[in-house]
Image (cartoon, rainbow, N blue to C red; front, side, top):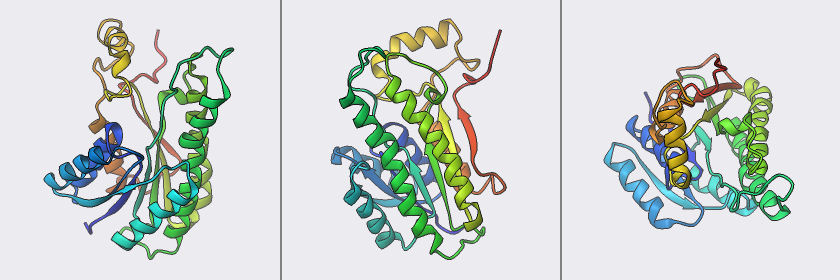
Amino acid sequence: MATKTALVTGASRGIGRGIALELARMGGRIAINYAGNAAAAAETLAQVRAVGGDGFTVQGDVAVAADRERLVRESVAQFGRIDLLVNNAGVAPAVRADLLEAGEESFDRLFAINLKGPFFLSQAVARQMIGQAPDGEGFRGRIVNITSISAYTASINRGDYCMVKAGLAMMTKLFADRLGQDGINVYEIRPGVIATDMTAGVKEKYDRLILEQGITPIRRWGQPSDVGRAVRAILEDRFPFSTGAVFDVDGGFHLHRL
């Protein structure tokens, strides 16, 4: 397999780092995007190289148009093409607020970073991909959106987060429909409860729900590598006749059970 290239947003830590490492294990070259933590991004790059991949770090806030343009420009300058875009960067509400008390500041922040940013970055990358020659498998590119079980699970103390993830799920369908004719497949990966610094503050709660109450049939926390393996399978072209597909990486949370 020819060396594949990927732009992974929010790759300095957590799920993004897990994705970068799995792509590195297949020899991929990764543009490791980060918003503010340069040291963490450098650590991700060192780990990427240690497992057989390569790449570079690139700062950028996906909510900012000029930063999005730079992410695409620098990725193409380094790699010559972008085989995969992973829209992973995202933030949680700074404060969990009841639906009747939630303020506009948090709402605007989450929509800018978690939905507006991925939409316009996908638009820019799709234009780049359309101009690329097909790769050895006939693809001009692939786009993966990392959503969440919150796309369909109501949490009334973080409604803004649920809404942006639901919006990202619809965005997957829209881009899949538009880009299928151009040799670009689009996928949604829907993680469940994953052990990252974002979930560290609710560890005790989910330990109880997962390990004692069995909220998921597979009774363990998800790991960033679980999500990373799903993304790797897409870049390895394991699903060439699928687009707009949703892959649940959630330990079975999505099952309706009695």
